[in-house]
Image (tube, rainbow, N blue to C red; front, side, top):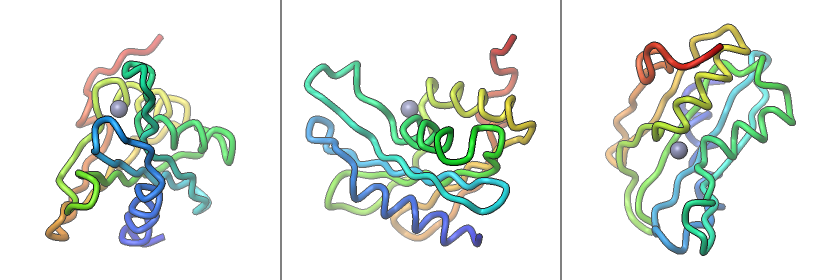
Length: 135
Ligand SMILES: [Zn+2]
């Protein structure tokens, strides 16, 4: 799957974000080695710390759809609702969750994104969280 299609999938997921408190909608699309896609969006609730990031929502969906051991790439897009995308990267907790998937998969998972001007970014979890925690 072309990167643009993975980003388009993340943008579609972002449309289903439930983020009434922050007003910041994030979508994530995760691609498997065989090209399957799992989606997630941030899900907030009135007990703020219990909200779920788009990345972890998508990782949970990926585990159910094709298993973390098949995750190879993910696209993340976000920004204020009703406004242009901004360049974002996963939060610290999500970086650890992505690293966990990378450990299980045996891949250095690629993390791609796009800002509101259409600029693409691409990195990988080993650059976002070098020396991640594992045991
Ligand atoms: Zn996060």
